[in-house]
Length: 282
Image 1 (cartoon, rainbow, N blue to C red):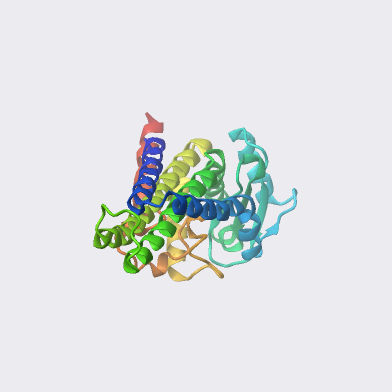
Image 2 (cartoon, one colour; image 1 turned 60 degrees about the horizontal axis):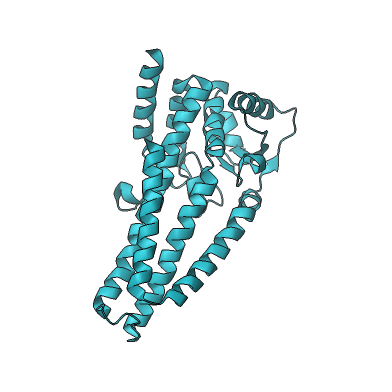
């Protein structure tokens, strides 16, 4: 169901992009904007993993470390290549996966996560991140970001052109173009956030079946959410927030409701895991 939802949302993003390009009427400008945004995301796709690991000063763990062995066990069970494993020295518990595909993946956990969670809960978190790797969620997120970025770029051009009286499409009122320029990027952002939330549900489900222990992830999510509300991960950025298993800005969420959240609510995630637990019992 979440795969279908993600496909639908990505398709909707593509339709929005075509709509805003048609409204602007400048095919050349639309192509230039797409090439620029596509180039930016191409760079991010191939180098963002190194950037985010360096940003959080992540240190690679040796093969003898307990967490490395835990990742190796789950990776073997999931039939995935062994990712690199990193630790971030930060008391706030959290974790993320990065890398453009399973062959170039990395899993990072904070020192706070190791201090606060027990082994079962840590396995649940790692299995969640490995599910992201298995489902190519970095690729999906990059595609969503590329299209949403292209929409925002062209919307800015539309808004500027309309205010300057340079309307390439004489069939559309300049006021309508300005309204489209304002609303379509918001719609694109909402859809991009929805894609991110869909992937989180899928990763939770993947963790439950990989570990055969949904309760462990439920317990881990409750602890992580509580700690995230008490303090913020050092150097946390809005651009990387969607990567973490729990939004590092949970304690400072002042957005307009659930539409603009990068993550589903922890309560919803726990409810879904409870349903999976009942299904597994049957």
